[in-house]
Image (tube, rainbow, N blue to C red; front, side, top):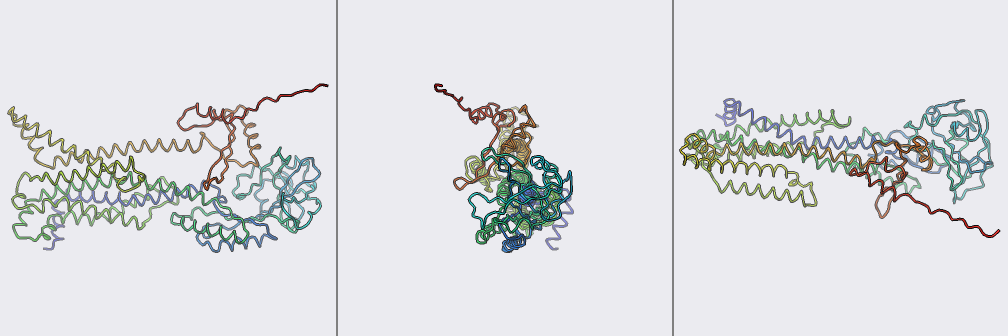
Length: 632
């Protein structure tokens, strides 16, 4: 009879034990493959969330140049992207815009009125009067700009091109020419439209240092009046990012393409801007955190399953000790005896591992659909297959180690009711487990890299040592109880103590329960700590209970608007962030309305005295002005 058929009949003869072994192997494989599968899905979800939280144009690519016409600028940007295939495939169709800085002459202060052509811009504006421009020399202006200029529909506004400070124009600027206002739009009704991309078209303000008024953009329908002037207009071509098509595997290619694009732009006199590198950096930071946290939670469960499998397999093998002794008496070779002794659980490992792989992938897919972004799914990657293979080998090794002692025993030892004990081997195994636990604790508490495999295994190793100690304590307590029962003549207590102290199966059960309870306590504690850390990180990152991102032409305008919306200073505070490089590092400067900081800001640690002290240091209390009057 073939050995595999003997194993099949043995499985059918012991369906209960076989089902337990199969379930343990399936859970082990499912948990093992879920580690890389869920890590990959969570990383994809983070990538999508980080990119989705930003405007598509900000995460995309914008090329700017001063060109003679927009078609040449579009061709130049497409030539630049030709050498970046990964990036180009994930960008949406471009949107071109032509902007010319104009001023309204004849006013007391310099009044800037940008004129922009941007495709079908008028279709995205909410007109409150008039109609869209159709011919050269016609514009549509914002309602507050019209009020400031005293112009209505049908009236004409004189405009003249503005040469930037320090620029050398090809010739003298043309004299002021009038443009006709055909329509008036409401800028507050359209500012959130993603169509406008990175363009700061809506923002009216006053700069008291330069005595300059900046008006909202005036839009034109044709570019004829923007070209052919003393100073060429700025032509920008925006390529929004198609976030749904960006995958985790694309990150290295995107970084390489962005570097190549910057190098090409330097040679071609193009200005390339993209927020994608910073977003990818933030994504990779969170990816590293996920890669550390997911194994920390799942790996102890894998080790627990393997330990339980070891205990069950050892019990099954010891139960079959008389059958193995009979096989040895009949002259079975060691290989045949090994197949006879552990063939059943090994066959179950081969059958249950693919089932566990499917369960792990299904559980990952369900979790991704329930908790992650729409782009996150369970992907059958090489790491998933390697994790499944590792689970198979680990389960097979646990079964082989569990049956090794029984298979190597002689016939007399196999026929004993009470198994022989090898204290040296057990002590060596326990000492090795203790040494590994100490090394893991040192790596976690004092090591520089906490993402090593031994650091991930620290909770499971500590729980294992606790279980082994609990099993040892059970034996010591049972032997002490047996000696006391023998002295007092308590027969029932003596037999119970002897049963506990002489059979290793009871110590294994106690060790198993201790390990399970320890890992359960670790999981519950880790969940609470992680929740607290997430809340702390969110408060530190946001800085307030609620944050709104708005566009403003300058900090003074933002400050005035916030103070007008909340005169009491109890609900809102103006904040300006500035990103810059200092010492080869990217730094963030934050400007706040210091007087409102104590009542609005949420400070890490929850100490209300800290923002008050910071606000006091930020305030620039000017010394009173001393006026001296001379004689007369």
